[in-house]
Amino acid sequence: MADDDTQELAQSARKYWSADGYKEGGVIREVDYASQSGGLDPMFEGIKIVDTDTHITEAPDLFTSRAPAGWKDRMPRVERINGTDRWFVGDRDFGTLGGNVIRADNNKLLGRLAFPKLEEAHPGGHQIKERLQAMDDMGVHAQIGFQNSGVTQAGSLMSLGDPDLALKVIQIYNDASAEYQEISGQRIFNMAHLPFWDQKALETEAKRCHDIGLKGFVLPDTPERVGVPSFNHDYWTPFLEMCEATGMPLNFHLNAAIDPNTLTWEGFQFEQTLSVVATMFSIGNAATLGNWMVSGRLDRHPNLKIGLIESGAGWVPFAVEALEHQFREMLASKRDVLKKEPWDYFRDHFFCTFWFEKIAPKYLLEIIGVDNVMFETDFPHPTSLYPGVQEHLKDVLGGYTHEVRKKVLQDNAVRLYNLPF
Image (tube, rainbow, N blue to C red; front, side, top):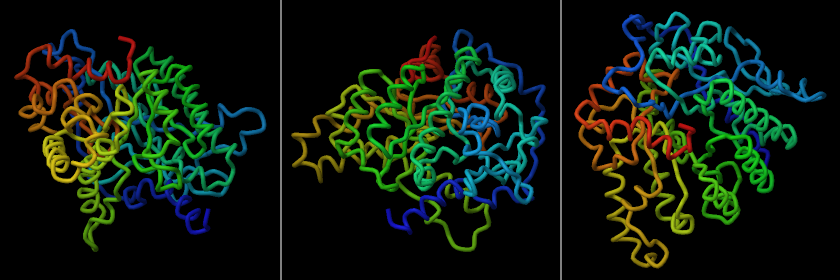
């Protein structure tokens, strides 16, 4: 790997969360928590709400406390630099602990990514007992969890030049995720990470994750950006076949195919930039959708399940309709490979999520597909649906039958992730 490529990979985790998001400032939104913590609303009685996008902050001792003998000093650790908690591996800066804008007193920080010190943030960001209480308060039965920091980010791990250490970090993260699942009483389900830079290690760890009970994988849409063959390559075929055979889904959290930071105007302050970037990350899922639909992969793997997470839903009808137009106008010569229409691919393979939206769940649900939409909060990230989970769900789903509500809030997630309820 060229030196420039190595340096770029090394920077990827450090830049995972912009340093500007941890500066002093922002606005505290006072939350009347007593009125927001009443649990499940009677409208949803009999439904186990699954929140399909949340983030479990990697605890400072996650890796060192689980490291085998002789590995502890090499493991990721947290140091406080200029008042901000950051991950380090050796002398390599792997960035901050991620996003947590819910304060320990249940109030919410606006205009920033997180509180700079872990103890300022809600303990449910990284402690399971407190997370379960927060879930009970908001009326959520189960959560699908994703990483918060960049400490397990493949690009940075690859740049260490130590494949054994990189693999061990991934394995410890996955083992911890299995522990969370168990001690939460099968209510918190972290998605597994994979050492996808090595095909044999990828396949071995994927099988191990299935064997220890994890429910899915999170991957980048364009692994070629870190020097790994794209999903168009047979490098991935055995892994995708394993996903089909076990029913374990792929998850693309936001979209890794574009860099929205290149789309904003020069001179913006942090809050202005993030407002555009966050919007474009969601809309960028249209690229992920398109890549899989035009590739022929879905015809080769008819039982593959794909979650588009933190995606939003309102853009889906336009994107699928646009792809239908492209199938007619540009892909006539590929119809021996592409056997279905885009709406068929979407309904057979994809799941999308909503949180703050009103128009999509109120008016587009049947167009998108009541079997393909799931709910999320993005807790405890900036712009998460907090507070007001139950009120929002009553507003957007109140006009539907109990059967439809149960599909969107429970059954679709159970089907995607093979949840045990």
